Length: 247
Image (cartoon, rainbow, N blue to C red; front, side):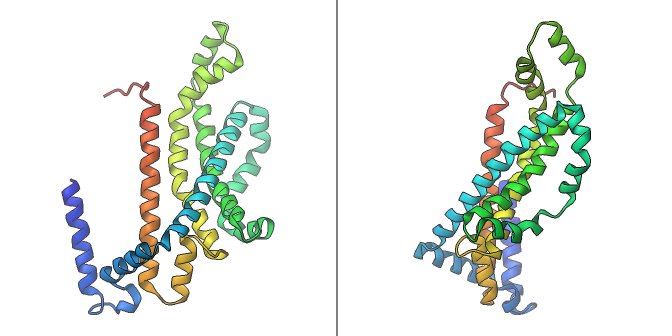
């Protein structure tokens, strides 16, 4: 399968290379050879690493802030029927609003520095994690909770021994879904106002009509997204060794 995937990738790149300048103007889509040449130039000059680090730092910090806030809020509201019903319309109204539109406000509140990118990444993450956590806690079998109560378990023991283990798969789904959104939030923030980061590279290359530079930046962004997703998948696999999966 891996070999077939490489073959398919090479086939697409070959079609792209042949079609650029013959079927479609190379100014519009560039060509793989120019893109990899531009990427190699950035790596050789070591100029790309500053932008990669800026994007990674904002993405990871925003991801952790959004994840922690989403998990805590999801657990608290799921365990409190009164506040869940009270805040339900407000939460879904916020969830339905386009978070990307908050980028100008975050820049106004937090300035042009890295803080506004972290805030935008965190906001995109928090609702995804919150919804999954809330749904996961709600689906816990109440009979199981009642059984543990009859055995004399405290509220903390019920939370840590029953609710969280049972809701963990749901929480992991929300977290894994939120990873690319954290990266997207950072990139958008960098495109709007920044002097470093991969989003800044995309915006600068586009303003200079440098199609190869835009595609080279997008390749790096995609590789970072894949790497982050694989790292989380490894963490999830190691942390859920205890779970029995029926075959």
